[in-house]
Image (cartoon, rainbow, N blue to C red):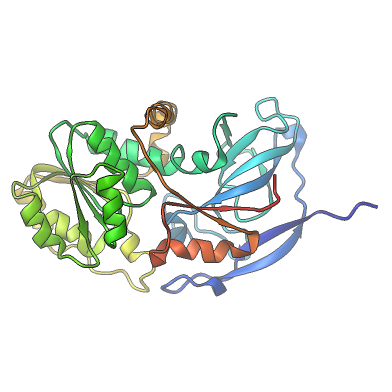
Length: 343
């Protein structure tokens, strides 16, 4: 008899308290899942995982735009996968797809009530589908153009500017004729912002005072602030928002591992005096923009207008350590992991 196929998984063993740890996850070998092919379900084999700071928030027992992860269930996360069993003509065997398939070798996708998998075109690599053409870049596109109403001549500030979302936001602002200031951690990432991504200036929050640098770089104020960080960085951005400025709240990585929520910005009154607006957004509310955003991003990448970095780690057993790279500053581009031998 052929050996039984197991489904390696990383489960959420406990809810993190403060800083997420490797011990918050548990390895488990499950049997191969069985899809209901007659109902249109498919079985996929994960090839590459993508990691996002938002996953940390999903681990808390807090109702948000997505339900919290369940204890002793595979950790929710994005993956690029190959269809290995299907009777669904929309997802033939051998096709490549992406979705929230979880930290496991195999997953059942296409269940009723769940988001449909997204087909990956044959000319797109898994690292592109999860990276520069994936949800992070589409988030930057929607946040800058639809939510932030980016305009030529704007003075734009982007925090977390060397990350997967922020780096694309910087480049979109440049493409639209804005003056762009990026905030990142360390000289290397600040050098990327200027030399690779086309920012006009970069602020190293590890070694520079953000407020002092903003006073020098944007004396007339910021027109559009795209914030991925929150905390004191958001407060600094509010302090320098211009009249009728817009603040787009995309993420708050500075507080994801806090045991207790940090106090909010202390200078919200400035929004009143500057007649400024501050708005949070979630990509799930803009799914009608996926096709347009993806096609535009593909064109920009083909034309060399959007540059990107991927940080690809290897090996199923190192998934938790790879996730933690997001919070230590070790990640060098969109954080990915390839399951060696899964092709």
